[in-house]
Image 1: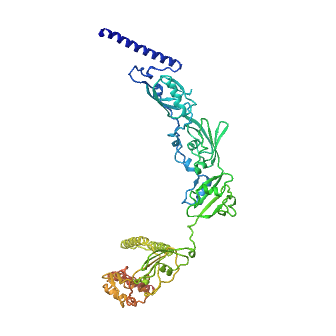
Image 2: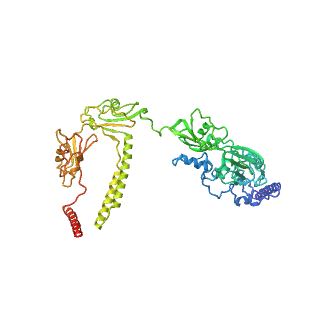
Image 3: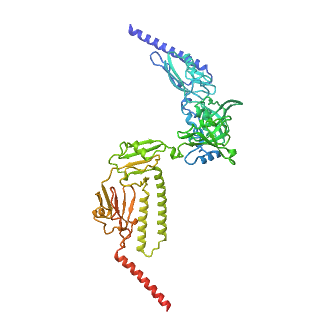
Amino acid sequence: MLLRTWPTRALKLIAGALIGLGALMVGAQAQTSLNPGLPLPAAEFSEPATAGSGPVRLRAPAAERTAPREPAVQADPAAAAPYVPGEFERYVQQQAGPDATVRRFGAELVTGALDGRGAELSPLAPADYIIGPGDEVLVTLWGSVDADLRLMVDRGGRITIPRVGAVQVAGVLLSELPAVVNRRVASVFRNFESSVALGQLRGIRVFVSGFVVRPGAYTVSSLSTVLTALMRAGGPSAAGSFRAIELRRGAALVARFDLYDLLLNGDRSADRVLQAGDVVHVGPVGTQVGFIGSVNNPAVIELKPGETVADALRMVGGFTAVADRTRLAVERLAERKASRIAQLDLPRDERAGLSHGDLLRAFSAVSAALPVQRQAKRVRVEGEVLRPGDYVLPENSSVHDAIRAAGGYTPGAYLFATEFSRLSVQRTQQENYDRALRDLETDFARAAGAQRVASTEEATTQQARAAGTQRLVERLRTLRPTGRIVLQIEPDAAELPDLALEDGDRIFIPARPTTVGVFGSVFNAASYLHLPGRSVGDYVQLAGGPTKGADRGSVFVVRSNGSVVSSAQGGRTWYGRSEGLDQLPAKPGDTVFVPEEMDKTTFLQAAKDWTQIVFQFGLGVAGIVSATR
């Protein structure tokens, strides 16, 4: 019995399925008929599901799947124009000097290397954004229906959802768009979830006019603002204003935008969103003032009527940490042929007005040295004192004050060898040393140019001498003076001279040395134990005496206090030795130096030279005798 009834039941099930399918097809045809002119191809959706066969899958129309999208924002083919300073900017830069870079305040924001498109790459649409033709709407459905659609708003303001039809979205706020789409889909399907978002934004055509680098028409995104359009146009030119920017819509003035509100206060409230056909107009530059010197941001600033010195100082970021905050110098354009420069005393003159072309300069409080008598003294005391270290002493302090601050001398202090160094003396020594070195180079060059060469041997000798001279000059160039002042005191002195101190002085008191050094052209250069009663000659003999090539007439002694005693200071015997240096008493810490003789000649070379002289003399005498006969 069951076998007989099975075909009948199967036929009933099949018939029911066919009836349901026909009903759905009739409903689809009826839905399509509600939107004449928008046929729904059969390929745009799958067959409706029967019980247990899954959700209905929808696809976007083939045209929207395959047609390439036009970019919402045009690419600017022109590269970013280089920044061109105005005439007043060049003048202010010249007055500021090569160490400072002075540009118009805010020029880096709108005239940089970017052409403005960086602000439009990924804009976040606000909730009050109004949908319009050209926008892209992303619709995702899941549940009883499955869809992932990218739909373009057509010129009629509609998007077309397969199996649902056209949905009017133009003029709808972004925050209300999901509800509008959901209501329309719910009229066809049940038991579904949805996600509606905004995709690519539409492009709008705006105009930038006035004093800008690249005036013209630009296609920007629908979320672009006045600042975006300015950046696309290269920003205000040298003749354009940063503070008189207008947004015009038709014949109406919509807003005025001051870039300084954004630059100084971060206020973008006047930076309105653009609409199609808007005009951004940049007026001519207003009152320009230069501000250089010890301020945080030297720049050329633009002032509105009524703004003062205090406003200008605020625009450049105020004074630096080392600035003199009590005064400013102002050079007025109208008075440059007369008094030229005047001084403004702060804060009394901070409300003074400024004129077009004025140049303000802030001074540094540390660039000029104060009088020595008014300076506090930072002094370092080292060596044989009870408390070595750095000390800050009041005005008019002396060496004795520094020693007292350091606790006094230790029993082992050797005051005769004290190293007293001063920064001002070091600078003076360096200047004199550099000048002497330049003179030495000039003398060497002049001597080399005036010397004549008679043979290849002399040419080779001259080249070798020139190379040696160059090496000597390079070595001398590496030396740096120490700034030491030689104190003229006795070896057994108990106190240092009471000299006035300067800022940065250094006092080093060594312990009493126990040796005497002998160096140079001796047989055993070394340091020898100092014994009372010995002379400089005794220590030279301890070192083995001068060598054969020593220059005995140029021996000198460097005392531990920095002074020098040389053989040239005393008389000489007929063979070149000093009469008094050998008997000079040696002091602890002395350094005896016996130099090598530089201009050496052998006996044969001397005989050859004398022979040539006698021969030339004989020829001359013979010529004279012959002429007299």
